[in-house]
Image (cartoon, rainbow, N blue to C red; front, side, top):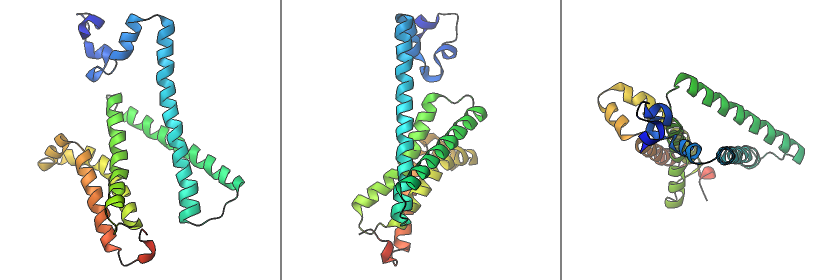
Length: 206
């Protein structure tokens, strides 16, 4: 069916992208007038922007409310809280943009699908092991949660880029994907650190 959209003389992947990720825009442009194409582009961009700004707001709230107010115990007034929230939101937006531009320059062959899978793998490996251990094990504590999240976050690029280049067993892990080993590593890190720090009752989860 893709040859009907691009013609027999053209390379389908050059028009539709790798894994045909551009097939939907091509179909919309092929079947509908320019007004509908514009509405489609606006809908896609609005969905992207709404997701990004929601994640930035949640991350900013985690920094100001969870870290500074609850963990550090700082009593900040509304004005200082607003300034801190705006500064953290701007900083995370700049860092995210810098990371995206760096990856796009260093690896121009990466597809949108690759970014989606890689990003959601990082989110899952960072938070899911900690959530599972929190709900299923009473001995899980703050130290274990932090260790699980940090290890899960770092394991995704480790198993994605470094391990497959080692050869031998690393190639099998590369074929399997980075999600499963990163999840298991984060889970083990949370358990090990919780057991190691079990003598600190003030930090245990009540």
